[in-house]
Amino acid sequence: MCQTGFMNHLDDFCLFAPPEANSTIGDTEGIEVAWCTKKGHGTRLIPEGALQGVQLVQSPGYIEIVGMIDQTKLNMQAGDFGGELDSGGQDGRGNPIGGLVYSNGFASNNGDNSTYQQGKHWTYFIGGGMFCAKICDDTQPNAEGLCQHIYDRIGCAYNAPNNAPNGTFQACLGADMVPVGQYVSNGVTTTWTQPADENSPLGVIPYTPTPAASSMCVTYTSASLYTDLASVAASGASVTASASGSSATGSSGASGASGKGSSATGTKSGSSSTATGTSNAAGTAMGISILSGFAGVVMSVFMFA
Image (cartoon, rainbow, N blue to C red; front, side):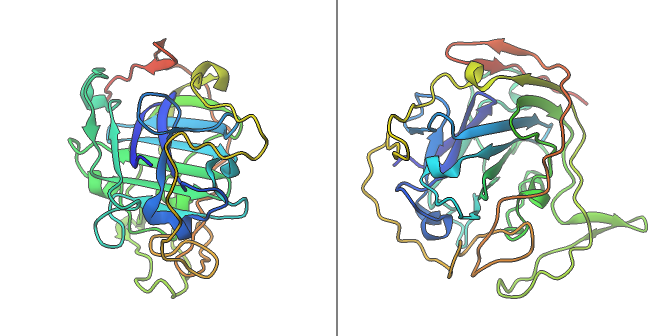
C-alpha cells in the first residue's frame, strides 16, 4: 500500500493506480498506490505487458514521462478516462493523500544518482489508455509553473504536450514547455485559466498546445529496459505485491473522477477526466548517453543551455 513514487529514468519510474481491481480513478484518487518498473522501492511492480510505449523527456526544469498502457493491468476499469493526481489535491494534502514523489535523475544532480530529491511540484494523469507524469526540479526557476496542477480538466494534451509515439520506448533531451495556460496572441503573452466552477463548460480554449523541442532521442526495446516487471500467470489477475486491504472510498462523480479531474476534450462528469491528449506523432531517434546498469539501464543526463 506504499504511496511513494519515483521518477528516475526511462527504466525506473512509478505510476499511481488503484489498490484494488476494477476501480476508477474518481473513486480511489485519495488512496492510489505506487506501481513501479523496478524492485527495491517497497511498492507493487507494474505487470508485464501493461506498458505499451513510453517516452521520457529530460528538460532543464523537469522530467516528463508519457506512455500508452493497458490500464486494466493496473486495477483500472477499461473504460475509465481517469483523472489528475498531483502534489496539491483539493486541500493541499495531495492525491493520493500523503503521496510523495522523488527523483535521482534531475540534471542538477550532475549525474549523481545516489542523491534523491523530493519533487514538491508534480502532476500526473492516467486514464483512457495512457498516462503522463511530470516532476519538476525545485532548484530550477518556475517549478510551480511548469508543474501547475490547476488545469485538471484539460488532460495530457495541455499539461504535458508531447510527441510520444505509440509502441516505442525512447529517452530524449528537451527544452522546457511553455507553462500550462500561457500563450502568445498578437505579441502579447496571455494566461488562460479553466472555469473555477467545475460544473461550468470549458468553452473554447484559445490556444493549441505545442510540444517543446526535443532532441537526442534513443529508442529501446521494452525487454531491455523493464527486466523487473512482474509476470501475471492468470489472464486478468491483479498483481498485489504490496499487501491489499483498503476499499475504494474516495468521493466520486456520477461516472468519473471527482475533485481533481481532467478532460483533454473539455467534457467531464462531476470532476471527471480523460488523461488522453492529442500527442501520438512519430518521434525521431537520435542519441543520448544511456549506460547499462545493475538490473536495467541507467541514463546519464547532461545539463545543457
